[in-house]
Length: 365
Figure (cartoon, rainbow, N blue to C red):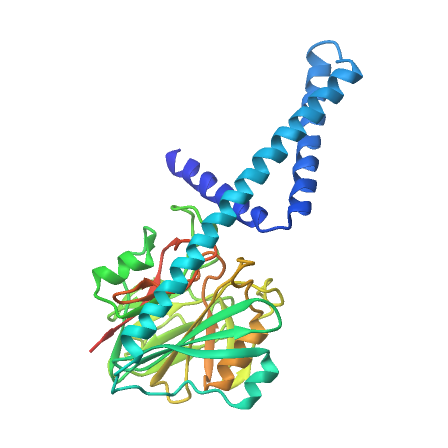
């Protein structure tokens, strides 16, 4: 019972976060409509158990309750806006510190994530390297089409190994998982049906193997997955492939939600209902050799920073930098990137990272 209450509370909080991002006029209209529905129901019930109220009393109750609900809503929205503003300030300071600490006087910069002039056709007005050390390069992109900010991390599997956790029955913060395994860089995997801490996976499940041990064998035509062999090569299995037996190449396997790129071409899954909407995104990809990894996080639901990107925008950007296969993982409030010594370097939609069941992390060999 307690778990169910926690799920309800978490879901309500996620819903309120989205409501608070609406324009104020839209919020006021919504509060009035909800208040109207509430009191129509109450008046009907009162009419059954006692004499109906006079019209002027009903009007007074409705107006006063509307005023109260609007006042509470505006106060909560203002508090949420201030919270997100504080998050933005902290993240700006964090990125400045990363750039100051890691880019200057660094001798091992790889400089792979360079964009040609065609990137301008994708609406990108600024690409800025924010981290380049120990073979990991991270670039921040800003779009002019709308407020949109994305981060792409790039590194080679000759230097880094994939690390998965066998304990996926309980949700955990990305940062907590990363510290337990001394991870250098990580992104979220799957959070299940709702943000609730004990929400079931439901249909959001697939194949999952850790160091050769099969944890989940639940592939279907709905889920892609990536896998890694012992030598440090990455492979991709798209949605349409249903794999129920495993070979030695599948030493570590983690499922995703939707196809994005297949064999160097856009392959956006029609199953993704958010694909055409600006949205927070988590994407895991690789180049044609399977030796180089791309991790992409798009910030979203933050009007002062980034509203998000469509799946097509994400796919075209990744193709520009040489990504060959890619899948989207759980998206929305779960989307976040962890970097060792700096915690979460992106800006999750809730203003903080969410707990998730699976994580994809990489550790220096």
